[in-house]
Image (tube, rainbow, N blue to C red; front, side, top):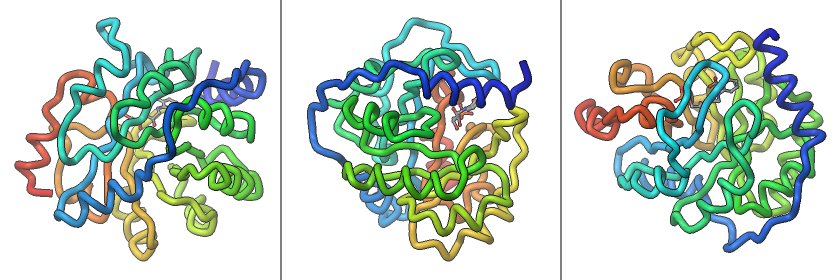
Length: 250
Ligand SMILES: O=C(O)c1ccccc1NCC(=O)[C@H](O)[C@H](O)COP(=O)(O)O
């Protein structure tokens, strides 16, 4: 199966996925507000991600529950948590998200959302933010899904990798924009942070850098212009990214 078919397959699975309504335990929290809080202190925010595995080869060495892992990620820079709810390729679930509602920070439901019923399912499981991926959704569908998420009071992180999607990303009305360094069609890390920042710098919403970030490649140059970073693998592998960020002074 090609990598593109992996993502297409995930979207197909999600269209057919059972979506039971769950018990949302609390009102919606703002990740945008959390990012503004830490940026006002001159620091970049971190969205800490939990996943059990991923198509590019990550696999969690131990049987850790998301609440157990994320509750230990206490640092002023943490602006929220990203919880994979995709089952087949990431080992996640709506239940995982629901169990993290008591963590005290906004929750990003990390999945491949292309329908209104997926948004409703993530909302009922306790999501504060949903992810939409501009590389895989037509503009009209993006606008429809952004509007629906907003009707639930949730924020939207609109992610892209393809530079050609920037005009659509800029006009979609999302609350945050994410640049994924990973090409989800090829799984390769093919970053263009500099070009991306130059074309998004004037946006009046937070811009998030995602994927492949660790203390070994951390530098103010790749992070310059971004309001937050989304980090999964390196932190799950025990990387002390918080200290590395302090050392770089951003
Ligand atoms: O990570 C993958 O293998 C992957 C494959 C196909 C679609 C999405 C994928 N990852 C989702 C993500 O964007 C990352 O989990 C997230 O940006 C964190 O990246 P990392 O810090 O490198 O784990």
